[in-house]
Amino acid sequence: MGDERAQSGTTLRAGSGTLTAEAAGRLVEARLMQLVEARITEAGTPLSLAAAMRHVLLAPGKRVRPILLLLALDRLGEDPAQGVDAACSLEMLHAASLVIDDLPAMDDADRRRGRPATHIAYGEDRAILAAFSLIAEAVRVVSEAPALPAEGRAWLAALVARALGPDGLTAGQELDLHALAHATSVAEIEAVHLRKTGVLFAAALEAAAVIAGAGDASRAHHREAGLLLGLGFQALDDLHDVAGDPATLGKPVGQDAGKVTLASLLGREAAFTHAEDRIAEARRLIGLSPRCDSALGCFIAGLTGSLSSRIVLAGGRRSAAGVT
Image 1 (tube, rainbow, N blue to C red):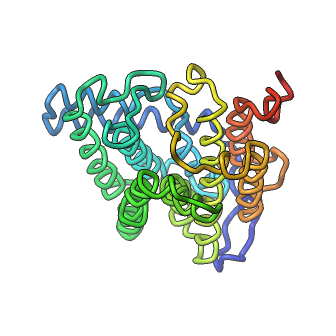
Image 2: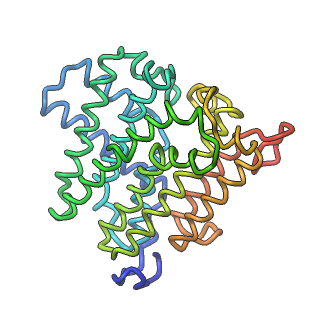
C-alpha cells in the first residue's frame, strides 16, 4: 500500500518507491552468495555437497519469490533490507523443491535453469542431501535474521515450515504425481497448484506484510493475492509445457504428459485467459492498478508478460505479443 491506509487495522506509512526489481534481485544475489559461502565455511561442509548446493541455489534464475517479498515490503513503507534474509530463505526452499521435483522418482527432468539438473550433475544421493541442507538452511536463516525482532523471526520460521509441510509443497508434489492424471475440474487442478506453487508466492507477500507490522486483514489479503498469483503463474507454466521452447525455458517440455492440466481441460486459449484472470484478481486484492505505476505492479506485469509471450496458442499465434 503505497499510500496510507488503515483497512488492515494498522496505519502504514507511504512506501519509498525507490526499490526496483533489478536492485532487489542484486540484493538477493549478493546475500545468497554471502549466506551460503559463510555457512559452508563455518560448517566445514564437504566440498562435493557444497558444490551441489551452489549448483542449484546460485544458478541463474528469476528469483521471483524473494523479489516479490522485497518489492511488497518497499511498497508497504518499510526498509527492504529488513526482509533480505527472509527473501533468501524462500529462495533456498524453492531451490530445494526444484532438486526434489527433478529426481527420477518425481518428474524425472534432466535440466533446470539452463544447466543439468542437480542429480544429473552430482548424483541422486548428493542431490537429495543438498535439498535437505537447503531446507535446513532456509529455516536457520530466517530464524537468525539479525534485522528482525524475535517474534517476527519465530513467525516467519513457522511460515517457511508450513510452506514445505503436509499442506504445502510436499502435498502439492504428492497430488501432482498421483492425482492430476484423474482430475476432472478446474478446482481439482488448482488444489494442486495452490500447494505446489501458490504457497511460496503467498509466503512471499504475507512475509512482507508481517515484517511491515500490518494487521490481520492486510496479512490475509497479501496471502490470498500470493495464492492467486501462484495459480496464474502455474497455469502459464503448464502452457509452456505444451507450447514452449525448451531452449528458451531452460528446462524440458512435455513433462506433464499423462496429467490433466488447464490447457488439456479447457484448451490453450481458455487456459491462458484463466491465468490472466487469476493474476488480475491478485493485483486487485492488494490495490495494484492495471497500470505499471509501482515497482511491484511492474514486476508482476513484466514477469507474467514475459511468460505469456513465450506461449504459442492456437494457429501458431504467440500470446500477448501477436508474433508468429
